[in-house]
Image (cartoon, rainbow, N blue to C red; front, side):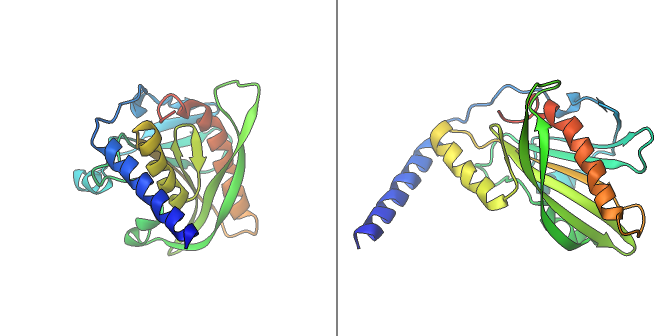
Length: 221
């Protein structure tokens, strides 16, 4: 009984703190627009993808986004990049999981797990850190793709959508901020050979390692 009372009291305190913070203006952190994300990331050269339709933007609710394709010399295929940034998630606009959009676009997840990637925090950093991201293989007809994605906010990289939401609440309570972003990388699987999936993932990992050092300028820190 005492444990139940303690849990209820804690939840009430957390909720009260969240509601109290919710009534105050949310600070807007300084950051560079995603349009200024470099088109050249190491050996990867980018080009702008078509803008999203307004009806799609209305559903996503993003405050800023980047949508590009990148390719590298002597590397087969291409890599698709989407970043969606949310300045606030208080008014119903929340980070959308890519899994919500795949079925509507005709894609079916056929396998899922996670991948750990060593990245640099800033360009030419002396040290690296490891991040864990979601890894999906999706299929539509004969086409297959590897999807790598994560949620990023305040220096954290989180694969779990649920932990991402938990941190949104705790950040709202502690810092009066709910800004966050989704980063998604898509890599086509080029053939049906036994190592085609791992080869596609390797290209995606190489691209993420080139991209990640620049994200801190554009995403919540």
